[in-house]
Image 1: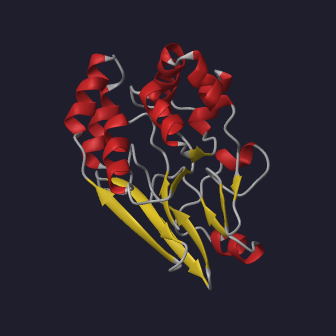
Image 2: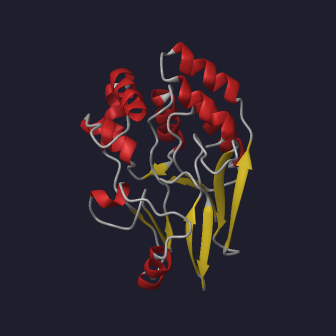
Length: 223
């Protein structure tokens, strides 16, 4: 089975569309959260997730919109969250509210931030050099997939791996290309991939909808 792994789309429809073109040969697609937040296409992105049956966990931005609580966010993220809550359709908000905090498959588990059974699952950051990654892999009999940091990496331990596919909608590793991964379960192979998309189109939509210009400028820098 070929599994497409995405995370942190953040309502960036244009980036998502390009990534999905690259995942057409995958049997399923799973997401490590933050479907919405930051960018101006929450309804369109959620509707693609629903139509394509993309399974996702809840991210911290998803939770903020669901609970209408932006107290843990910086001012720019808060503005984008309030915007999202204002324009999101009722049925899409309900879909968002029903996202689980984890996906547990036969050979891997998915969380937004860290393996946990409470809100820590979507609030704690695990960066590539965090020693906790090895500890978590040692303690688990499955591979682990997370998002949240927008930085792609793979750590392997025997037949297990710890994967962050990076961000589709807002990369932060200095590379502006949308990031994602493909997991081939038969080969036991995980590959990180990138694809270019029309950032100018997203930037223009940000300005049109009155969102902070910074959100568009950072896409060009990939940080």
